Structures are given as C-alpha cells and as structure tokens.
Amino acid sequence: MTAGDNRALRQHLRRLLRQPDDLARALPGAFYTDPSWLAAEISELFAVQWVCLGRREEIPEPGDYFTAEVAGEPVIILRGEDSAPRALANVCRHRGTVLAEGAGRLQRLVCPYHHWSYDLRGNLLYAPGMDPSGPLREEDTRLRELPLAEWMGFLFVSLADEPPDLPAALAPLAGRIRNYHLEEMHLRHLETETWDINWKCLFENFMEGYHLSPLHRKTLHRVNPTRLCRHFPAGDGYLGYTVGFTERVGEGAAGHPDLSEEERNTCVMFAVPPGLVVGVGSDYSSFICLQPDGVERVRARMGLFFFGDEWTGAALEDAVRLFRETMAEDKAVLLRLQRGLRSRHYEPGPLAPPDLEGTCRDLHRYLAKHMAGDPAGQAPPGSPGEGGVP
Image (tube, rainbow, N blue to C red):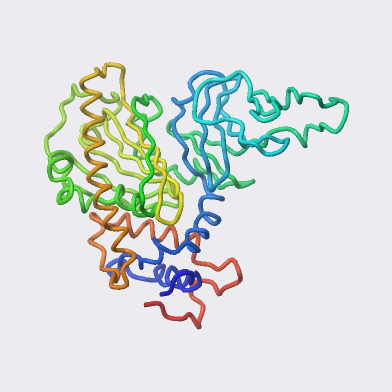
C-alpha cells in the first residue's frame, strides 16, 4: 500500500465491513502516516460530524468563553447575555482577523485589528469610521453561528449546515450512563497537550483495555485490570467497554444516589467519534477532546470532572497525579508506536478478542461507514472489480 493511495485505503475499509469479527486485524500503517488520508479524514469526518470541544462548566456565566478549532476553523464557545451557550465563527467579518484567543470573560467581541465589535450573539455593534447607513448589511457583518449541542454536560460543535441528530444517535449510550449524571459533575482539572502521534493512536489507546495491565502495571492495573474489561455493542455514534474494580466500592462512596451497586463498581469507557473519549466513574470521570494537528500530531484537551463538592485539595491532587502518570505512560509507548507504524516491516496483526480490543474494531467500522465510499465516484461497498490491498 503506497502513501497517498486513498483509493486503496477506501477499498480496504470496504472489505473490512464484510470481514468476520474473529478475523479482525489492526489497520495498515498508511492510515496513520499518509497526509492525504488525514486530509480526507478532516473533510469527511471532523468537518461534518459533531466534534466535542469541552464542558459547559467552562462557560458558567454570561460572557464566559473559550476558543478552539474544528477542522482548522477558528471557533469561539461563549455564554450570551441570555445565558444560552453559542458557537460562533471566531473570524472578523471585515478582513478576517481571529477575534479572541484563549479563554476568559468579555462583554463584547472586539477585533484587535480595526476594532470592529460584536455582541455575544455575533451582531455587529460598531465599525469605526464606517457609515452605518452604508453597506453594513446584517447578512454581511454578523458572525456566523454554528450548530452547537449540549449532551451530558459536553459541548459539541458541527461545521455542517444540517448535522446529524446527536441525541438520537447517542440515546442507547445515554441510557447506559444515565445514573452517573455526568451533567451534574464539575470540571476541576483541564490541560491541553500536543503529542507527536496520529489522532487515531490516542483514540484507540484510550478506548481499549488490553493494555491496562501490561502497560499500567503500577497505576491502573491495581484498580481496573484488563481481566475485568467487557466490550459492549457499538451504536451509530458511539462505542465503548466497561471495566470493573479489583476491590468493591462501598455504598457510602461518592457518587449519585441513583447508581446501583453494580454501576458504582463499574467504569464505563465510551467514545463519541471522531473526537471525544471518556472514562466514567461514580465519583469522578476523565475525558479527552482530540483533534488532528497534522498527520502525526494530535491536540488533546484533557480533563477531570467530579461528583459532589466535598473533594479536598489532597484528594483532587491524588486524582490528577494518577491521571498524569497514566497519560505519561501512554504517551511514551504511543510515540514508539508511531515510529513503528512508519516502518516498511510493519504488517497489521490480529486484534485481541472483543473484550480486549473490540473498540478498535468498532472505530475501524466507523471509519468504513463514513469513508469507504469514494467522493470521486468510486464503486460502493460490495461492488465487483475491487483491487487487492496487502
């Protein structure tokens, strides 16, 4: 399989859809190293699907905002004077300057270049030196508002004019995690890192339990070992597995009263592709909002959010330390993985049984569902005459 051969990669995905689960294999290296394939992923996944950018706790009050990018498009997420969250294109309608950076609180958006200013709905308030009775039509000067969806406290943005129905796609998943009440948890830790790996490497790593015991022997293995992992069926917009605890959690432990004993003693690891992975616990949970920043670079906003207000400084520090130690172990091995994926000697091996690596198979099926067809008119899945791909 040669670099840049997107047709061959799409053919590979079509065959994957017809492949029995017991014959599932890892993806060829080009899926992680080919710049032209990444360009296709950005245009066919990140630019049209719902992409999670953060949590609603990041914008608790009117005027609060944070900035991000979706498929290279600058976006600002803010809470308006009416307390409604909004996503706006973070680009001045005058000559295109990015309006805001970072996060904080503001009363209006002011372009740093020529000081055009906008209210928190994106309406132009003032353009210095411009005649308001002249060519300043609202349709030419209002910041574009982007589709925004809030689900379980997470904020999703789409660049599509008519994005898919997110709550409907996630309804079965919502039923599985409802009693954890993620929407009532509070964000207590947030950091952003850029790793020199393909985005799918981080996604797959977070979402499979096969490595919990061998890689995280002194961290996660003591709490959530590989042997307690259980895969559950993927849906149209999600995938995941559960993992139990080595020691039972008592009834008095932190967590919502709605939780059953089984739920209290189970972590739910789920993903909403292409850009959100979450580890749900009764007392606190972790998440990563990830997006590609190049074929072998990924931007990751990593956070911890907690149930209840009784978390002390020491307990919070312990949770953050465990998370950072775990992510450092992941990062070290993923950098080595990325090097290996570039090797001419790498050949995709068989995936472990579903309880261990079924989520990798689910991600590959997600890619196939959305990318197996050829935008240039290539034959649909199941058609004759497909060329072979090693």
